Length: 66
Image (cartoon, rainbow, N blue to C red):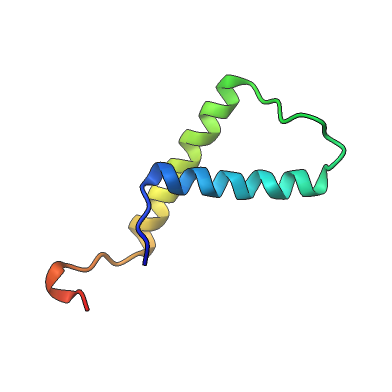
């Protein structure tokens, strides 16, 4: 398993998110979004990813590693 930082994971997740949006709105010529909305989306995505990991991923100790 490859471990990514939250930043890397967020970047990949948002790239996939925008890929879906562009797929459905291919007539768009630019990807403009305000700096504030861009920041808020990034923060919300990071927080959601952190919470999802906390709630759903069991972290193993070194003794439990295979």
